[in-house]
Length: 213
Image (cartoon, rainbow, N blue to C red):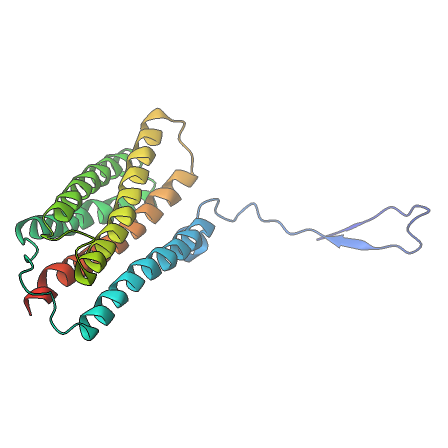
């Protein structure tokens, strides 16, 4: 609809403005309809590039070294990476359920699954730390040790950031007040968690299996 503008001395000719009624548009959007989703996607690209650079360096160094890993180098342990992988895979369940609860605006269920995601995330962080301790080589021993630690630390930072963020988000949900945007945040958090799971499986497979090939 249009509304005439009253003529004044500074408006030599009458003009009209167009008004658009947006009251029927939803106040909450998910996926590409949410600006925060695009921010999370950008963060995924940045963090993914960091880990991918470390992985690329690992393969480059393994190709130029005469033997990988060097002779008399202890191979990384298998138990802790396997346990961490199982925890990461299991964390997909609360992530999916949290996303579904957020999309149907079920606050109680969403909050419960966010807590589960945070708890499993912190457990995965602890196992990732133990994986660093069980890698079997010092970071300054040689190129193999340095790049192995670089890959694990790059992922450790990614994983711990997500886990701490999820725990803080869960605390906000219990503290209140409830906001509509928190449903978007929960969905985006679930989206990012799945990214950390994929990266964690790739990193563990690289560090534990490639030296054994």
